[in-house]
Image 1: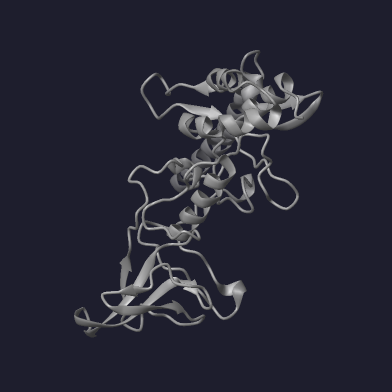
Image 2 (image 1 turned 180 degrees about the vertical axis):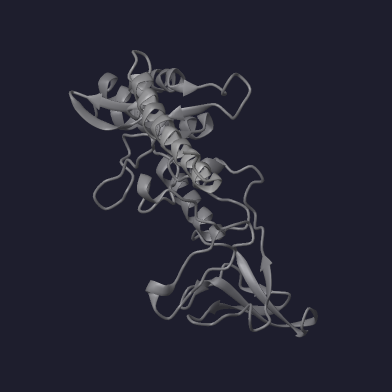
Length: 293
């Protein structure tokens, strides 16, 4: 007996669903798992895990922090770039800060828990800290000496034009001393918590300052990667840390520099991306060759 057309069509669709479920839901995934376990591929398929003395210490694909219990950098190790993934390098919370170049004004709330730093202030603070850690000039354009964004809210008599009537250093809360004493003849005030000077009509005015045009601290030392998991730093940031690490370990800087070169990866396929230094692998090699004093 011939089945009605609509039943035959539904049976054909059901058979197709079953066949493709088996092929794409079972056979294909299992085949990929099997291929991933072939010699030469299994290490990468399992997460490129790194073991030391039988213990897994991390992955070559995911960065990690080298800090003490209080979050301070451990001086004998090379430091990674900042991370915005959770509390730092959290694979379950991979993300960027989503702050862009126009993020220059901090939120200074009456409740410290509701306050937040602009991208500019984060960069300024990190640059200052990296400079102090490595004994280099950590100053950057548009940053104050105390490591916040050098930004003023300038109020004028006619809104955007006319004489200046009031000036506030928006990223320095009272009782801090503003990074400049006056602007166009008007005394600069520190910011008051809870005040929105931009909404009140202040014109955001970044002040460049006298920092060098080419900062000593590289960009990847003060900005997080898009994923927040980047395991590498630039050769320039690694070079910045060589003398400090060598001093802490009582090693010859030239020998430490040689290790850095050995753990520097080239561009992908010879032309994509930029060279990078895998921080975890480098620090493991340091511990093997130069035990900390």
